[in-house]
Image 1: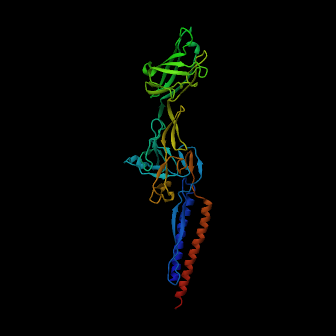
Image 2: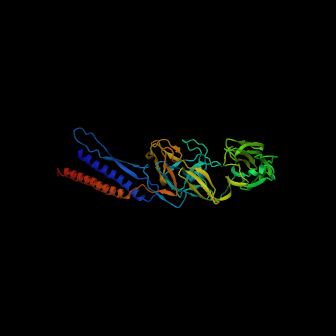
Image 3: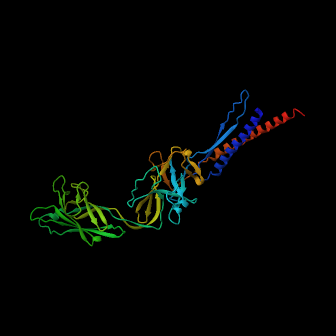
Length: 432
């Protein structure tokens, strides 16, 4: 029946526009929701083959969320407000799963969130989502983990009350020794200096270094004996070396040779002495042979030119920040920074195929394809932005325009139903 099919088409039109109205109302209601992805309803026609007469098939609607659309970023005052500039999402899990600790944690995805430490220092949102990342080694390096699974991802935990020290492992020494001290008739008095370094427990230790010249009967020897003592080893000698300096016109005053009497060997390729102090190995760079930036012997003055070292005393953690590559670093009150975690970005072939869940979170599905964990800024992914949130992708002006169109379309379909009802009434009135 053509008239009946018209009635059904009108009803399907009402249902389809009701679905569109639902998506519009959801979008407008979430116009102020950070990280919200706009929903959209699409209409699809139904065609019925009725032989010689035409039958109205009506319309059906499908609603989907445009997850690949991005809202504008806005700055905030919280360093662990995190957004993604470009493609990719943050890996998160639930606080309930973290507390239960029953093995592997379920992974969800978010494009932005405001994370703050809970009572145990775990970075958590107000809705109970926990940020996950790869924990760094003690030296700040990131272990190698598989990129197609969540193995290795851990809840990001930061204790604001923690203290940390950075032991000294490398030192560079630039000192000028007086050439006149190695000439015949010199008094042979050694030159001495002390260099502070930091132990494994944040203690202050010292390397005591003395340079004793070799005084010849005639001429100049250009030779020194360097003795290194370590306060952490009860002032024991940890290295003794004979230094000979060049006296030629081309390389005059630079190291010509280094002979090891005791202690770690001298590496001529790097200009480094491999020492062992009380807390472990320490590399002391004195310069390559012929290098004017390390130890030198010139003129008549003893002058420490430059001393560069790593490490720091114990400091208290004051804040954490995340950089564009996803490295979460702790900042201490002594100026020392240390990498704690790396936050990877999760990407799937079809972001719009992800399953939408509460609180702007998403799950991987067969339609989205398998996920891959990228370093932020690598591959197709964008950058991680701290002190930022992603605003809603809703354009209120566009939604209000769609609302007007939907209202008109709904009214028109209602008019079709009214007209069909009147026509059926006329048909009924043929026989009275």
